[in-house]
Length: 93
Image 1 (tube, one colour):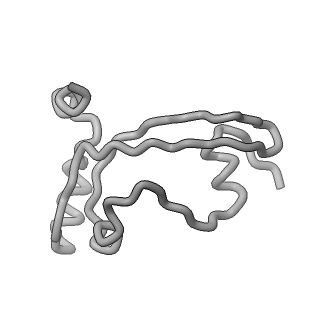
Image 2 (cartoon, helix red, strand yellow):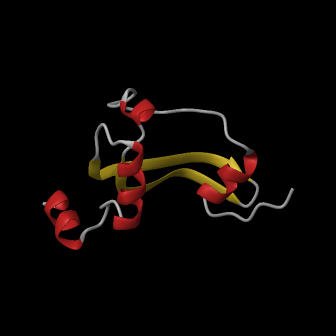
């Protein structure tokens, strides 16, 4: 039902402007309406969470990313600013 609703409302569809850009590069595979869940637990200055969950929907075209899917989790190092922004806290170094 959720996928049908996303398709009906075009939530997660690759925008036409971006589609023309990636088609010029040569699309190997295109997946639209991809559901992603972000989980955060821990604390950063200004936010403490025992566990927050947010869902997003989007499109996927980069070949190197496709080679890593499906995965249950993905972890990588990011600058502290990105962590603050992801959990909705202003970053002031």
